[in-house]
Length: 302
Image (cartoon, rainbow, N blue to C red; front, side, top):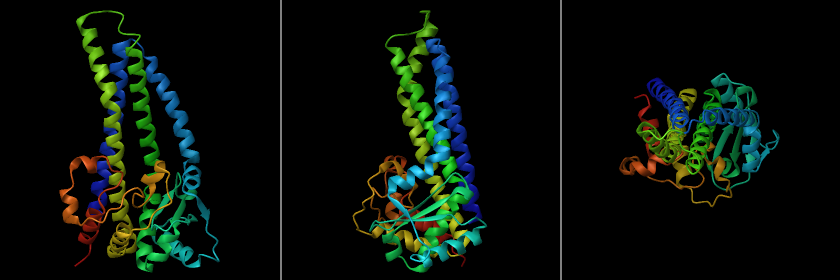
């Protein structure tokens, strides 16, 4: 378990570093190509505004987008007790608990830090999972809270926005403004800038999705560490992936928050997941459930 957690943390920070290098490189090349250093300055200002908005209001936006309602303790006493026990085991404050009226078993956590966290589960999850499986899902989501995943992913989303913004401005400027000098070096910089403007948003999105998948693996490992029972979460993921209920969750902007992507049904085995094309995996917010289950079961102490 500790090995899996350490590996995921290191790779996540490596990807974040790559993100920052990409933004700095874009700013430098575009500034040289168009003699317009204001591109980077304006992008940073807008990014700061976006970051502050996301930082303070992302939880409320996500809960409203999912149609979540606060869960009364008297009506959902068992859920409250499970969350309380997991929070104690994880050394975290108890988050606010919400329920989403949806037949598909699913859940997500949101909030900028453990003191401002919220946990939302669907009615389908409460109806279809056993207690140990529900504990596994709750521990996974509490791991996102404890690992500050929501804050990290907010930063990543903002960085993707900065890259897209800079690239969009660069493409627009290419139609009406080039370098003031027409030397060969200037033409090369202009060509490089245009290529980066086209490819950078794609690269940034791929990095974002890679970070998202790594955070899911990390939350699986941390959640298993909290309960000391990886099989509970593994069994829950299998049930979630095999469920054929039609979800009412249509807001794709928050799909990455859920323990399983509501937009995709995934009942593949670990062996089939290995055969999945790298292209499909690269553009997914979540790792294949079969692979997640395999990793969890490898954590079982024999």
